[in-house]
Length: 334
Ligand code: XMP
Image (cartoon, rainbow, N blue to C red; front, side):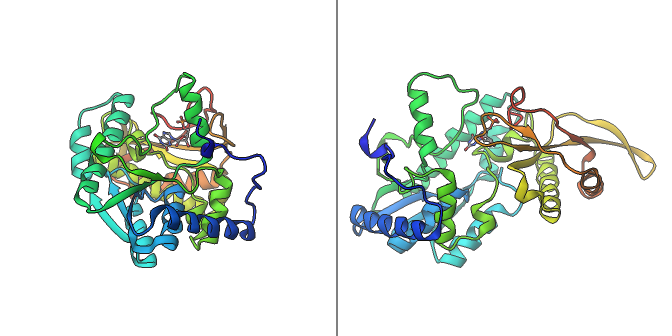
């Protein structure tokens, strides 16, 4: 393994702003030295890692950083809008927004196998991003939000350990787009990335937000994705997140979301038969996502969420609670 990919034992854990600021100053100088007056491209999903890289590189090289935000149509409610607001409006970033919703949903139409869905989303994400990269002139570098666990994970993969799911992260650009990498966070653990993010001025809620998988709501709209069920999932998920914020569970629970399966049950609304999908609540706690336990949600909160989802979301007529730990269930359903 490359020596620059090994975290030295002497490297102090970044636990406070003082250490974070020292790290930021050092990386700003290193990035300026590496990049000079050239341009750097970054796929900005809005996740913690890519957002912290963006903030760090904006500080180091300003408009020489070209951020591309690809909306694959599988983002949570208002997510792409908030990426634009934070980076373009708030930090004056050089940000290109690509709305590829129709393209992704057309490709995914009728595809029900989870791994096929993941592969389509991952591959197409790279294709759309590469297309955008080709339109840019004078790009010499590609920035990535690689963090130390990603490096440890790839060592495991190189040793031939079998993965349960094919995780999608940006990487593997086509042959004609081989850029030198800029990876300022690659020796940091997640908790350190968060401290650095806050020291860079990113909002607490953004830096401590729950993990969101690369394939997005695509692996929560179970089976073959349809626009109406995806819409119902997005709305129900927004209600769950809102209610978790209100009762303080959002600070306590590691990951929480809604999944909507492709089944319908019979219900009744306005004295008529009302067929709808069930919304499944999943709320888990974990340290490393390898195993997970179930968070106990107070019944009053569950009742309120059920009431709101079934009244406010068109197409949902039941709310179910997933009590399965990992193992046996993975955190995501697909
Ligand atoms: P599973 O479902 O394997 O998920 O128990 C473990 C954690 O990983 C997240 N996840 C992903 N993250 N790209 C990612 O960056 C992906 O393709 C992906 N799939 C799952 C999942 O949300 C959980 O936090």
